[in-house]
Image (tube, rainbow over all chains, first blue to last red; front, side, top):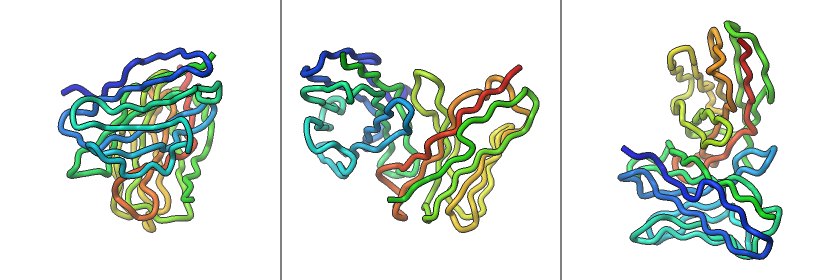
Length: 114
Length: 113
């Protein structure tokens, strides 16, 4: 049973470019969460999605960041016009609909903005 | 904002020693999870505690949830170098049982052979 998959594992973008991070949840999981881990900081919640719905985006920066979880395909975290401060590890987690206490994390995407 | 305070932030011990990591809050959590994260990887779920006073054991690891569900501890017996890593506690804030997790800042454990 495959775990949460994220790609790419490493992404380098120049300032002003767009970054697209992908997440495929565990089989049977319909809830997806995105977290960001900045250097020397803990994991911070960004957004919580179910299929075709954003449930909680209270942790998302107001500008340049967006997320989606379409009916078909992976969840996408999109960062437009990246800046150096966006450099971080971005983790996706998923949980099943019937029990949301536990979230299972993917290996993360390390974004470096040069 | 409901915060989780972890202590200590750093722990460096010799193989065979015992250790305890604490996770405290002034707020009630419906559940607490403990994760372990290695460099370059995502957090791996170790355990979930739900009931106040609950104790769970995972080999040499013992997890306890406080009676008031405001704190938790992780105790490792006879630590081994393979236990080295970042340990994170996390919980659902606001009494909910789903949705976003609030994380502690983590405890970096180093076990020397």
